[in-house]
Length: 372
Ligand code: AP5
Ligand code: MG
Image (cartoon, rainbow, N blue to C red; front, side, top):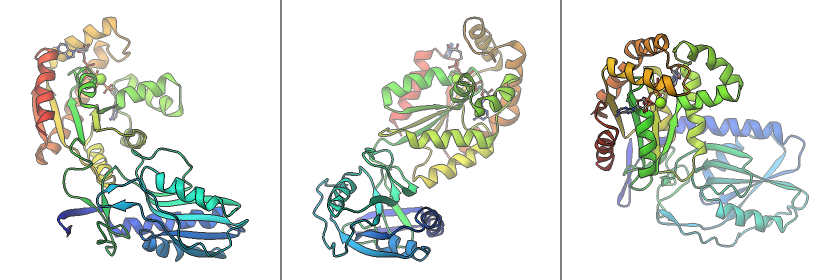
């Protein structure tokens, strides 16, 4: 569903049901962590009034709540100017203060709030935020309770406003225009083993400031480091089989939120099953992002096999042996190929002739990205 506020259109990013579930989980954690402490919650006005109200309904601690005011936003971009805290009437000395904020982006506002609150000599200051923008957050303080992580997009609803309006909506909405400025691209590089995904990804990230997420590289790193995930993956990858969808999705989700200030992601070797594609779509939706395009490198099986055998002679890929290559290609045709149709139905598939030279393939891909 979309709504219009002033001149702009917004669409649902986090539905009410999910917000309420998240808040209940946050409250639950606070009830466990803060039991026996002398707690005072401080809601930061205006944005946190709904969050604070809904959270308090689940809090079963003997605690107080008060509200302070700070103004930090004008229009759709952060002004970076933080005004003084207004309204401290309570005695905070020796108390556990839990600051309730609707959103933390760079963290500059919160830094100033914490600095000012410290002057009242509380025992400790904990920070709870309904939303966090990890890609712009400067990590200058610890966040004790985080509801939802979102990309660097402008959001309204559920207490958040756009020039004063929109605070009354139950859901959280993001700008319906292109997400996060003009350059937010999430690209899937698709193709059979040996089609050139890795080769092209490395060239694209340099030119377009994108982050390369290759599940194959991640798995090989886990195996190298002999982690629990690596041990689990080793057996499956040895014969050219796939690791579980759950593992692939978990690795992607973890990496997605670790990367700050990027203009988007290149997925290489992922998604490899329909389940992974559905999982990725859901994950993207939760984060207010979407897949921009799937670029599919088309290469004949015979050419693929030759290239991989060639790489096997010099490279360090343990799976470049005749038998395993055969199995990787078999799995690609049986399971992975259908993922192309999944994105074709969404109108996002672009076929690229992967049998051309590396440079020519790159030019075709680059043009497609520039046209997004
Ligand atoms: P992964 O690492 O993804 O391997 P892959 O899909 O088999 O593909 P490759 O990395 O071998 O090939 P590529 O397309 O990147 O081509 P490259 O650029 O290297 O996965 C490995 C394993 O991990 C899987 O088998 C599975 O077990 C597991 N796994 C990974 N992701 C998973 C997931 N999501 N779910 C479950 N399991 C997962 O090029 C190949 C060669 O060709 C190179 O030598 C290159 O120099 C050469 N070359 C490239 N382009 C050209 C060109 N245009 N002309 C001539 N030569 C070229
Ligand atoms: Mg690769």
